[in-house]
Length: 111
View 1: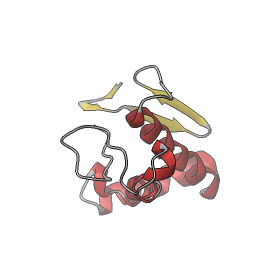
View 2: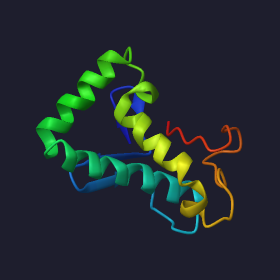
View 3: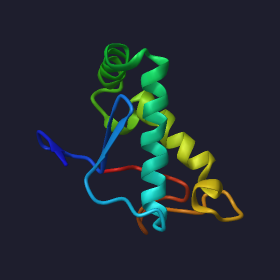
């Protein structure tokens, strides 16, 4: 899914999660993506849904120098996946799953 020149694997709007591809619960990367997007649903509630979340996300985007991965709300979602990788992927150790072979251990960065 694309917005302008940027491509996303998933986008969360309120309590709705839109994915670029069908979700498969048996695929580690898909479970990481869903966990990441579920953090955004929690953020929407924390910021009283649309308006508050949009303002916080926009401010974070500007303050991070328009760097998607450095946006504090994205960073929170990435951190959640990293800290909870063993539970998300059903393995017995931290950093158990990766979204791509070239990814750093425990790092999930959607493109």
